[in-house]
Image (cartoon, rainbow, N blue to C red; front, side, top):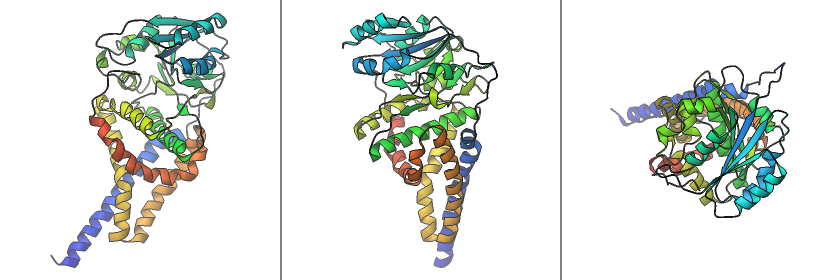
Length: 377
């Protein structure tokens, strides 16, 4: 084979590869992410309310309890509800702060844990105790470092429990702060929400976030709680949902009043530690979820290297046309989802953040192989 024929052969391979990867990416946007972009909540003629037990697990969270717990206690909800705080072996002033709140808010119930659960690392034991303590069938979960975005959080989240629905996935957003790093962290959080909420709409629910998650005690006990993955420190939210969710028993609620807000990581070190902890559970997902998530991540990771290679070795006009098709579809979908999740300020930078994802995958790919720590705090 002559040199020119050899080069032409590899030029075609590079461009065909780029077109294939772009096609895969576009399919994800059109089949999965469009479901969230064009999702409209059903308007109910009759508003039915259910008794709800809000459950918050805390360990040495005195500052967060003082700051955020009132948001859960002042909810405007006309039906019976309770707020259970499981104080898990705290050494700080959490107990005294909680007792002070209990004098004012009669719906606040306290559970004091004074002994560690052997062989059950992480948050699962205190959360299980909280669920078993709950008086009501519907439990609504959040964290001590989270605050409801409105006084109608409970009301909006429980409205998703229509006939046959046992699990409600909510959105846990980060507070908006000044600086580029805050936008970068919120972009990654938005990108995660884009995926798990879209997959749920497609009937392929693979996770929820413990910052804003609701389900019925019935489904919890039917699956024997966290028993199948008690040995894994994390996964009290995503691994349980990965196991319990079906095409028909799961719904999403993305009303802005139903969001929760938490403080974002302030440093690179904090963020990397947080993401490493989250990614260590994904290896336990169902195979179909691992395949779909892996294919998306791989196609996303290799998209820009192949785009650059196509410009250099094939032709910039053709490469830009293919790139432009994805760019337009991506822009429309992302704008509509950002509008729904109250992250519109990220839209002008979405191309920069999309390029950043190449480096993101490089940084966090090793998390899949790391051994998890046995503590949740």
